[in-house]
Image 1 (cartoon, one colour):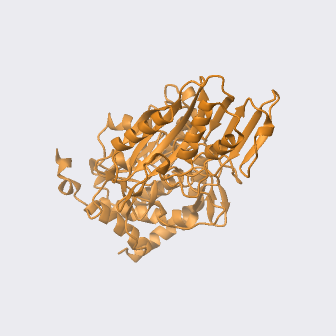
Image 2 (image 1 turned 120 degrees about the vertical axis):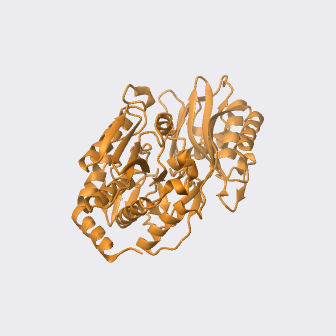
Image 3 (image 1 turned 60 degrees about the vertical axis):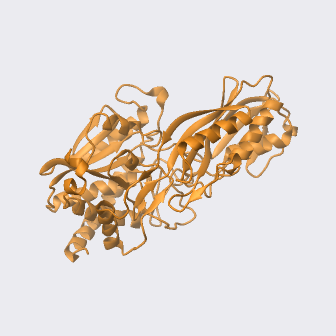
Length: 476
């Protein structure tokens, strides 16, 4: 249970500081912290945007009274020192995916509308970062005991590989336990395995496709795609999602519009690359090699359960496999398509890779694996999970159970970690509010206020547990 005094203090802090918290969030959202490796440099290993985003986040932590440090632009730390150097960890990230198309509000500012905050990063992950920081500030100001040091880690490369955390863990000891405010409440205790890579065609000789570009990120259903073909526009039939335009050279430009959503939750998304492939196939304008490629893409991208290449499967713990095409490119005469697969325990990561290699070979393409991450799991009945879930339930009264997810969070890189909020699992929002990684990404103000309270209570309770006794590995 939560004492009435504690609840009153939480509410009083929100009454006094909520507008400041919204402006803190806006100061982070205004930074287009999107990876740009072509401009990577010393101090900005992921490009200027993520570096500026990290600087802005650490400037906020300094204003809130944390002891902060920028670790060469890879990642930042912000501490509230405790009686011990042993740490309770909170890890968030200040980088975001590209904005994509379809926005009705400025993507890199915060628009307040009917109880929602619209802007890229309000959900993933700048909004959760702000409320978690303020929860820690609240505890410090009220004089809560900190037997352990509270360390916030602020990443700059979560969306495109989590190389920031690889850098950190190679140089620093991980916290005893860590929460990642980058999912939904009540708590995510398991994550699917992850296979990422791309298909590449053989060199296309005497083809009609001059250029192809689709999607903005590996881990998002492609929201837009464009192709230029050396073929007469009359051969192509426009659709609701694909426009047909003549080029000055007498060729055809196809412009496809889909619905961009997170690759781990592809329901409701529409893959623009698939929409474009259907129009190309209907035209009969391509060479045999190009047609083979687009038939492969039609089968692969027309569903998101992997059934197009024989990978569909599911289990009770993790649910169904998802398979999403994120980015299409043509370079040096070869066609390419990235694939992001989240796999349940019903299939191993090695089996997925083998199936992708077989499917590519049958289609005359080559599969290249760029990343494999194993499934991640924490004991849902252990002290760590039960402590966090009880904090959520005591604040909200919501008794739903913790869950597993297809998304990949920082939690999977730690020995003892879980994803914990700041959204609410299964929550419904107005149709004009977009999801993470989608257009008009928006966070509920009520949910963020609730998350502030949950994080405050959760951190206080985590500070009260003897974690070395709980996890004997910490004594080594």
